[in-house]
Image (cartoon, rainbow, N blue to C red; front, side, top):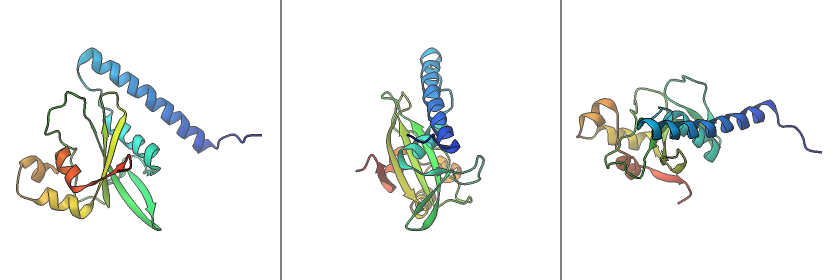
Length: 162
């Protein structure tokens, strides 16, 4: 006889069902209006949790979105998402990364136009700080934004496994 899932397992299952519905709604909205619905960040967080098994942090946690335990150590993860349709122009940027907040690593979840994850990259605080602090654009230096290609260059693809 199978056990019923615990409340948290049932809630997790329902959240992933809702996420699937939200993806479909966002696609339809975009098809009708040509404008994004604005759910990329939420989808990216849940995709990271689903694909990597990280635990999402409480809502509105300043600095980080998820927690992972690796080698007995807690790591605070900031999760960024970027939807890159096939027609996306080069130079797409990752949302602002604030160095004055508490986090250890940044995950970049790349999504295609149907909001399905295509890759997840990870970069450490030292690498991100170095990239943000280098001479260059105002977006990078003042807003804490890296281009997707810069993030890929300083990070490592962790999903799917390289």
